[in-house]
Length: 460
Image 1 (cartoon, one colour):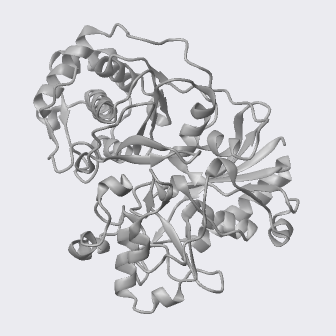
Image 2 (cartoon, rainbow, N blue to C red; image 1 turned 45 degrees about the vertical axis):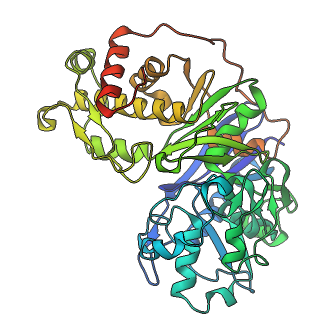
Image 3 (cartoon, helix red, strand yellow; image 1 turned 60 degrees about the vertical axis):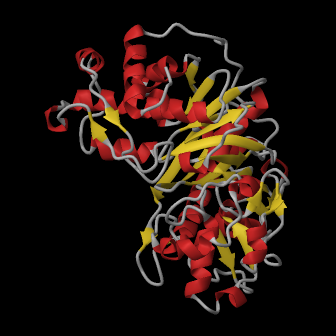
């Protein structure tokens, strides 16, 4: 099994990449925006457009390399309602649509408590249960039209293989539909009238199907090649480390969302008000986690500014305590409801100063997330923030633990998803050589202490 195609549907972009199993590297990628359509009945994803893109990309990659297997990862907070004909019973609602908030009081009256689901109450459609509740309320015939419910990665594997599943990492991504401690659907499923409609829940690391002949004919792939049922994208980033590392450690998956996982952490004081929760890993085990919309925040702060800082910019930011306070996105993260602000006149900032202060802000919010979930041991950072030296250096200073940027030549999502279908894929993740307590730059430590004092926590 040499070449594995990975379908990776992120909130912002959709990708189909090729992972070389021998070298453990992504060698090609096709991408397009993940479009949200504004047509009635509500904002929804362009599922038909994504399917055309996936088929075309699989055909091209197969022509260039010969695809031996397929795996799938998608963003969370999403589910697909299927009718008796196997097509959508209703469009797949965009989780950033505010409609479900209209029924928040009624929904809160039936949703399970945090102790059952480990799922915080989130705004918009970020709780899948709230999406479904709103859809059922607005469409009186919908419940009768629903024949089966599948989680989002499993919708694409259903299209490729015909097998219908739900899967634990996606169910565990603050859906309100899953009880992670007992590994079963939550009481909300019965209350929504979906108990006999939920597709069987599977473990991502142990569930593959075979490509259908008609899809093989459409793409040129061989019929019967293995197709992973799929996995939540942040849990795909975590999976290689679960296979390679021992003891307590944390993984911070960065992108539109920054999601922190504390493997071996205590996580005894999780609080939905601070956007901490129980995720579920690829083996079906609960993992204390925290999240905030860091990539989105960074884009909002930087606007069109240049994304680099000189040594002089960094020195000024540290010396003058040029600081950004939470929360740029007040709807997510450990500082929900807080109003963002600067310690200085924002209009006077250079692009370099803005970049440095924004990088430090993201690191300090991340460190707070790690504290809240009881993180111990080294921290591995996946995704674009791993290439931000200012972020990495401040994260070490704030946590006083090793922070290592992943040097994996493919994205963590792509590699983790590919590992679901290949036991021969080279896993380039190795135990970290640096462990224990570090010696951080005093200027960074002082900046972190000042920031935490300002926002009212005792860290650093």
